[in-house]
Picture 1 (spheres, rainbow, N blue to C red):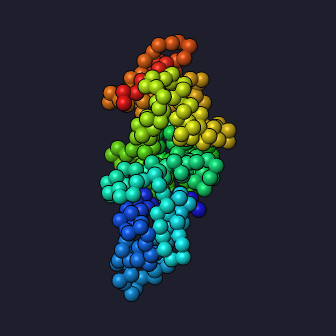
Picture 2: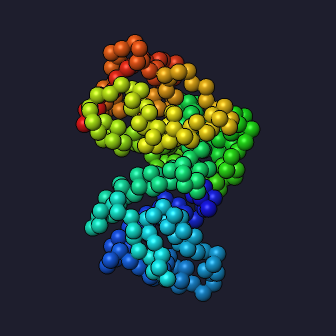
Picture 3: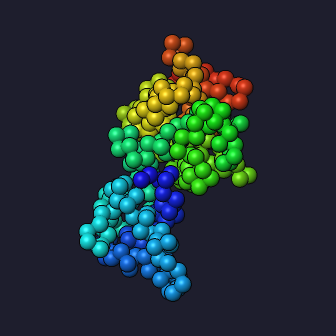
Length: 284
């Protein structure tokens, strides 16, 4: 299955399971004990069919597929090593989205290819006029692609919205979803600038595409263009959502965008304004 097709596997539920197991001795817990601790009302009631309310049981396989946990007989154990043992709940809440994002969007795995493709498509939308709810997204997909992809129902759209928000690719303003990958780019800054604080924008754009393939030149973005011809960016132009993120980081003083060379220029667009830059300096 995949996150879009498994509505039981919500970000909040995966976090709750992981955070609870992280507190256990040896980070190991019996499955029925886990269910009772997270869903006590279900086990206390004699009137509910547990098979119909087994949200935890349907979430566990998704967590196993990400390498967060493993199952041995009737026990679960944390196997992930990217989140240090002994991390408190707030640390887990901060680190878990990045761990899941790296594993969910690895193209070679394929299990969440549908989520990767819909996020790649959404990041190609103009954040100032993006479809912001299920009805608008459905209409935009049919108009642009003549295909709803796997975002084919209100429930699946809800999964896309929840996970795109949790993984840092979107934000919500007045109940409307908009593409905004600022959080993701901010997280990757140490890796993007690991060898120097200043690079040509072209270098950073291609590094970002390898780290997170839903961005320009990434495999998901290329796949969408190959199948649907969805995005006709001119050479050395960034999409409005990626431009928005870099310009926002500059406004926050986190990066400096500079024009040093016409030969290496990239064009960033914000609404109707176009900005020409060739270098990025990370002020980290």
